[in-house]
Length: 440
Image 1 (cartoon, rainbow, N blue to C red):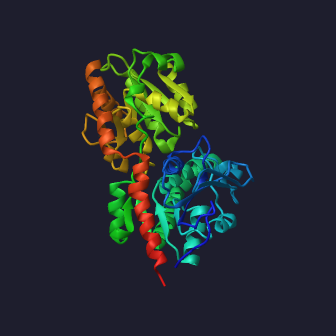
Image 2 (spheres, rainbow, N blue to C red):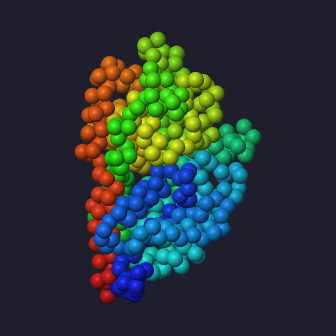
């Protein structure tokens, strides 16, 4: 089945891949969106672009404008307004940002009508539209596992119910009826239905890949790694004098770093309680400070409860975040809503050992316990505080050697974004498109 024609530059049309994400790509965009932004940047740097790549996002909240920019030949970035924006309802607004709850997006459907392959990564309006596109055209659909939508659904459903219902009724609905758990299960079923119809599913980690391969045909599952910009995220940017001048962090204190949405989905309640344990501890010569890079409802709570031991300036651009990470001592990330945890790898690239929870895909980032980090077995402040204490042992020279070793190991283990595109995505896309074009 051939989908011919003339392409954007008047040249014979080559294969067109559309990636659809039902999220906005503004400054508050999380790791889900940033993956495709980095892929787009890597694609734009290629001299030979073997496919045309279209990236579709939601327009900024409240915007009705349809936008399209073409930063490079063969690359287009589209922003389409939501039909049923979740942010329209105040009780549905969360720190994760809004999505589109519509069952179908006609504008997107028209925009991807002649695509040779579509990649979806969520079960919302764009993902549902991509599923209908695949049914109608018979062309290959891929699904990329990037976010634990079920975990987000459960956590945010509980927050929303606590907000709109009286206390006893919220407790009944959440605990006895378990509406958040039921909604999470519905989210899992919706994604599973897309998996069943997808020609290929990209897993975010090995645990996920093995689970999917056990349910789907193994050849329909591939690993989509996360890339790194090793120039941006590097221990070479370490300069505690700069950090003190810019953010007021004393040079003499050990520094824990967290980056991400500052809400319950990322484990902020546990992180704050851990810091409270550490500040009361007699076992540490100098209690650490915590740097929170990001915004969300728990940022104010962190400031109120931790006082001068926390530095929470809000959202940071990627360059500043990378410099902050390079000046930390440990990256702490108690999130249980991660599929891949891009930010954990970025921290390791700057030389930081990382603390992550057990049972999650991000635990595979730890290759040598005690060197590049610790997988914390129990979600209890005392356990996390003990892990912090272990990683702070040793003198300044030992910590410097460890930073160098962690950064070097990250370079060996993790690919660049260009490698992710050329080794993980392009071969899979090309095979699916060529197979489809040979069909009678």
